[in-house]
Image (cartoon, rainbow, N blue to C red; front, top):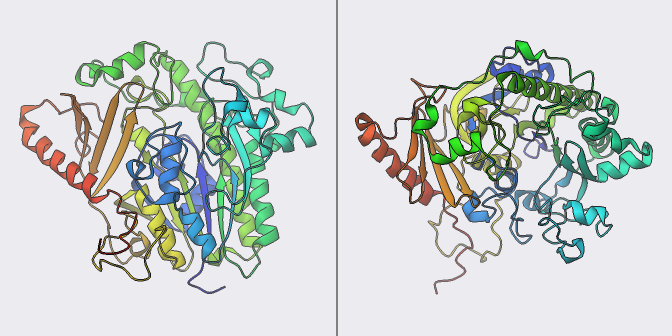
Amino acid sequence: MAETRPNILCIITDQQRADHLSCMGNPVLQTPNIDRLAASGVRFERAYCNNPLCMPGRATLFTGLPPRSHGVRTNGIPLHPATPTIVGSLSAAGYRTHAVGKLHMTCFFGQPGQDPATLDPADFAEGAPLWESGRIHHLPSPYYGFQSTEFAGGHGGYLWGDYLHWLEETHPGASALYQRENALNPLTGIDQSWVSAIPAQWHHSTWVADRTIDFLQREGQSAQPFFLWCSFPDPHHAFCPPEPYATRYAPEAIPLPVRREGEFDDLAPHFRDSYEHEVQVAGRRAPMKMPDAHRQQIIALTYGMISLIDAQVGRILDSLEALGLRENTVVVFLSDHGDLMGDHGLLNKGPFHFEGLVRVPFLWSWPGHFSQGVATPALASYLDFAPTILDLCNVPAPEGHVPPRPEAPRQLPACPGKSLAPLLRGEVEQVRDAALIENDEDYLGLRLRTLVTARYKLTTYSGQPYGELFDLQEDPAELYNRWHDPACARLRDDLRLALLDEIVRTDNVLPRRLCHA
């Protein structure tokens, strides 16, 4: 294979914080295989998702566009099938494209009680009701540019897709072992938590690795380069790893999440409401108030889920090396967004742009081409994922319908992100000054926009007098909101102008101008 056409292997987890890796300084969790990947490449200490929810975050990775441009503003909005994706561009350029595991480009569920017969497969190709009713047996091909897929839908005890078909065919009745009522330990009273009875070798994390390795063995030696999406549904809640991973970490050894008494007094009203009451937000409804011991148990179970994933990452890397593919394969490890994990009293995800939710793991490795063992403090945005992949593969960005030659020579690039390739090669120290995070919380009628700079983080709520301003240098735990501090008024206004500029700069420039008028 030509050096300019590397293979791409993207290993993505679901809802994993940046600091839930031992290579990112976690004092309890051990992830030796992911650490091994970090040691062979570049680890971003300050990478940010563009939306802290699954569907909009993944749509940004596939399109290179911010949520307000690709239209998936929040969970429950399918990515329009006509939207150009980088996977489609890679496929058109000769790449073999394949996805294993979770995708979440279309909706998982209809509305409660809705007849599956009324659901449009175009919007619900990954939807549990259509798979369960037999209307869908496999994702269509191609699927957002993927020539083939092996799909795993759902979390916790509710699963569907190709994985569930495999499980029931090879181990009839085994899916019942996922259910909380069959748990080895249901952990009564602890939110969404139990010890799963499913054997680890039948677990979906193992299946995702098995199918990824099978693809590498079948097609990795071809002269055709590949783009392989290896997507683990964990460590997303519910928190239910199998043994021996479920009891690997002692809850009492887990440091307590960060919080400060009275901090809700300085935050938007929905923070306290979500802590004390049942408030519907995209990602959670149950109150987040619970004893600290419960939070420690949830974190310990999450660590077990990540350790199971880490073991599978080790198997995948071993397979790459055994097949002689490692030297010409770019491996990226990332997650779609983080999890609050008890920080500030909050859990899971929603309109709370604290670091635990929006800062994500982001590791890039390509031996002989990227710097090795480097931890960079440079800001990175998930808007940078698509242009970096396309740059490394020498493939043009997806632009849809374009004229034979540009009508406007100074038109802006199709993708508003920055290629990280020069940074990965050690040629520059940074490629961006700020990262933008969007969140439309339709349930609460809120529109959040957050700007992260080298030192500060500012969050605005459209039409509201409140907001957040944190000095990440002096207050890395984000315990003291300076939004209403008179001493920070000028800083707040300057950051709001910078936020406006970043919103305009990253606005969609597609479709292309076809002629003068």
